[in-house]
Length: 289
Ligand SMILES: [Fe+2]
Ligand SMILES: [Fe+2]
Image (tube, rainbow, N blue to C red; front, side, top):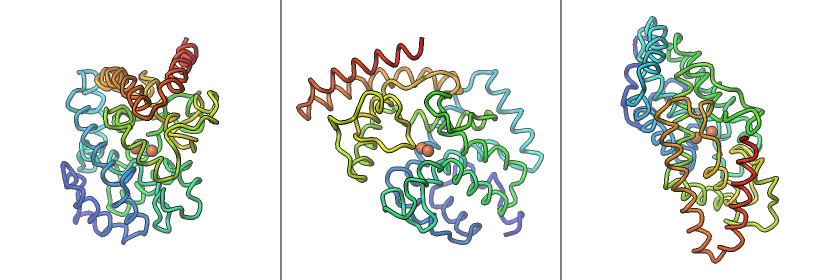
């Protein structure tokens, strides 16, 4: 495809169908794209939700943050591109590395599925760069690469195998994805995904250490482990690189704690779960100090 056929600005506020159709044209129908299109946990639906959160973060930048985005925009615009489109494409594609080359999604039990989950930021970044290079969006390649490869970073202790972001566009995409973990409805997504991969809400055999050390690219014994991480994970600048995202993160987390206890009550597990919640919260507080 010649560069004149497609501009970055064409992706500004476009639909999911447009994204997929253009990616199909440019990448010539790779198998993983089909799995990405239909997966309920990390596919297009999650990509679009992350894109909407990213737009909200861009709309609420403080003046200093706005200047940082503008500086990156000027570098990208030397190639005739639109910075908002790069943020949006980064948000849309950030989890595209979760899908195996054979087309199987994360729950498709395809070959190397666990490795695909572990390395999905690297795999996704390579795919996004490939898409940008084939489409001729050269000036934006360092930004899309950074946005996808750094989206799982929280801090050195929790995500030692992931690299921190180096660009502000990457900070926005990461904050949007990480914020998606904390939305009131995010527990439903956790339950659905864990259910799909055959894990219960609560497993008595999961240790406190396992729960504390869990991150989103590791297998967990139960949904509770993931929910604890959602409810008490870090809300600092390295994970949430915009001021507004930090305010939202703190607000959402305080609501999640109540929901987690409700979930346990509905399942007759109040006693077990409230003890774990208390201990987990105290241990996280110790680690922060
Ligand atoms: Fe991810
Ligand atoms: Fe994500």
